[in-house]
Length: 296
Image (cartoon, rainbow, N blue to C red; front, top):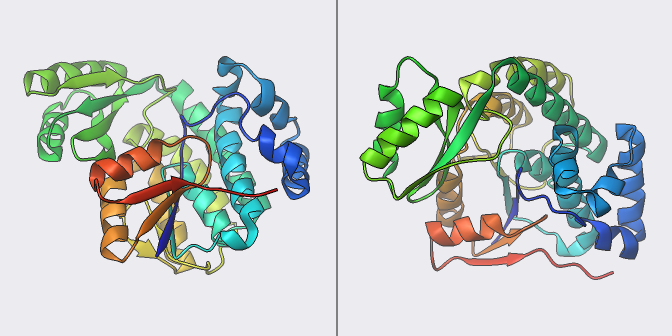
C-alpha cells in the first residue's frame, strides 16, 4: 500500500516549483491560477526570491502548498494513494491531493491560515524549540511543571525528537530544564511564533469560520490527521480535526506508526525537501521511502 506524505513549513527553498512550471503545461496553468487568486505573483518569489522573501508568512505556506498539490496533480495516473497525511500545513495539501478539497478552496484556506497565524504571532511574541534525546513523557512532565508561562509539546516527530512551543521566556526556561533532565540538545527554532499551542487560539477562531463555510467532500482515500494520528474519511470529522489543528500537537510519530500498522509499504513524499522521509526512517528504520516522481 502507498502512503503519500506532504511537508509543512520549513521545506521551502528558492527555485521551488520552477522545473514544474517550465516543463508542464498543467503545472503552469495551476500556478497562474494561484497567482490570480492570491493577487500577487507568488511564482516570482518561489522561483527566484531570497530566503527572507520566502519566509514571509503570506508566501511560505501557500508556496509549499502549491509545490505539493501541483506536483501531485502533474503525476496524474501515477498518483494513486491508499492513504495520505501531511505535517501541519501539509495536511491541507493532503486534503486537496485526495480530493477532499478543491484546489481553489485549499489555497483559500491556506492563505487564510497564514494570515491568521501571522496576526496571532504579532499579538503574542512566542517561539518553538526542538528537543532531542528524551522520552516523550519526560518532555511532557517538564512542560507541565512550568506553570507561570505557556509551554507545550507541539510536534511528536519521531522517537527522541519533540518540538515544544510557547512564550519566549517559557521556551528558554523549558530548554534549561530539559538539558538538566538529559536532553542531548535543545535547539531554538527560527519560527515566527508558537505554532500548535494555546497561543494560536486567535488564529484558530479566525480559521474555524473559513473552514466551517467551505465544502469538504469524501476523499479518494483515508487521511491520517495530525490531531489524532488516526485515519478519517468523514468530511465533518475532517473539518472538526482541522479546526483543532492550530492549537493541538502534531502527532506525526503516531501517524506513521498507524499507517504502518494499517499496511503502508511505501512512503512517498510529495513536495519540497525530504524531511518527512527522514522522520519516517527514524520511526521505523525498515520503512521504504522515496520522493514523488513525474515525467513531463
